[in-house]
Image (cartoon, rainbow, N blue to C red; front, side, top):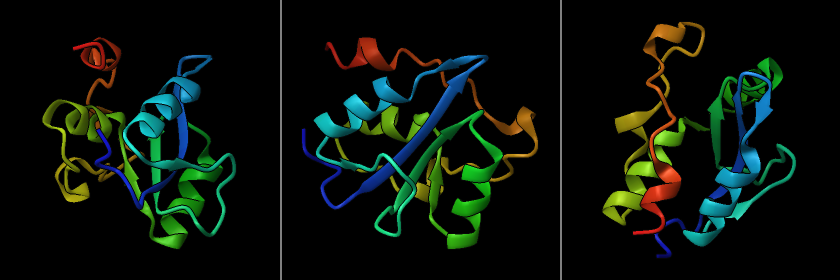
Length: 111
C-alpha cells in the first residue's frame, strides 16, 4: 500500500493530554509517505488534531495541505490518496466542525 509516495507529512495529533502522533506516523510510513520530525520547508501535508497552535499557524502561513486523521483513514480504507479538499479541516478554531477522528484507524490496518 504505497499510495502516499511523494507526501512529506508532519504529524501533530493529540487526544486530551495524550500525544498520538507516533501511531499516525507509523501508518503514514506504511502507506509510503515520508514523515518529518519537524515542520521543515519540505513538508507538504500537516496531519492535525488538537495540536499546538504554532503548528496550525505555520501550516496556514505556508499554505500547506492541512488535514485530519480522517484523510489518512479514508486512504487506508480505499487504498488511494483521497483528495485533500474532501476531508480538509476548514475551520480549526471551531471544534464542532472537527469530526471525531477516533475512527478505528488501527483496526482498519489489520484488515
